[in-house]
Amino acid sequence: MTVLSNPLAITSHAVAIAAFNLSWLTSPLAIVIVVSLVVGLLMVVLFGYTSDQKAIGIAKNQLKAHLLAVRLYRDQIPVVMGSYGKILRGTGRYLKLAFKPLLYVIIPIILLVVQIDRYLGSTPIPPNTPFLLTVRTTGGDALNDATLDLPPEVTMSAPPVHVPSTKEIVWRLIGSKEGEYELKIVAGGESAAKAVCVGSGLARISTVRLRGHFWERMFSSAEPALPENSPIESISINYPDRNIELARYGMNWIWLFFMLSMVAGFIFKELLGIQI
Image (cartoon, rainbow, N blue to C red; front, top):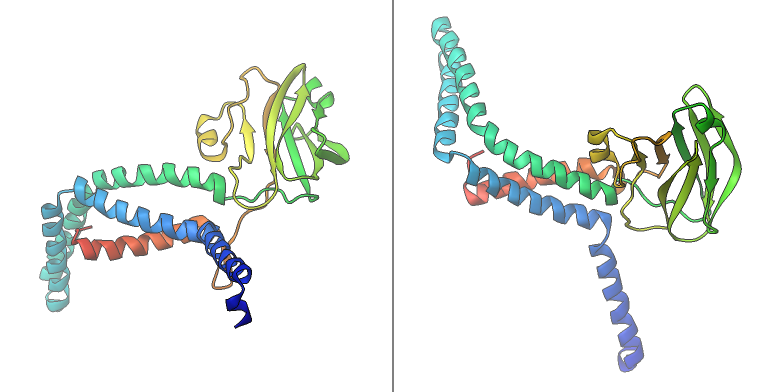
């Protein structure tokens, strides 16, 4: 009764509930669930719009009929063998009908997964936690004379380690304060920068910066390419992997996304009456 009669207590209680709800809605698990449902729906609708639904329905019915014939006439070898041949031809016909719609579905999903992985694939470096910065060079002077320029919030916790066999230099660093910082590497008279994110929560993270390797950069880097004439081939940071907890079991968000989107797709398929 005392709490209810105190406007300040009521307001504080309401703010706490709202903050809890907002934090849950912006959690990685909630984001994966929402994205999976939306992608499952769009996947089914896009497949239905770009496919020949009537032809797919006929192909599936013919496959069911041939499978039923195998079960009904299993004692008649010629009939069974003929049904198996028709099943193979029917499967090829179905795959031909589904190939083009699947391309329309798969390509946007891959691009979407790549972008979301920038946020959900790794976590920022926690403050006051050591992390490794690895620079791969072309060797020679670039390997021996490379230096590192750090902002005040990031410090070196150990001398750099040179690995001649892989032409790499490894620095162990510590970020003392949350934020996004630029680490500058100078090697062979050329300089290159790498962003590092220190903190918690969701942030757009790039684990590596590369020279060339267009397709690898498309999938693993969110930063511009290093100059082609740079003596530095790559700069990487060992960000911690993010695991999403579900029923006390941690997993990478991509596995959870594919499982939930497939389940959502089958549900929406039945609700919308779309043949897949």
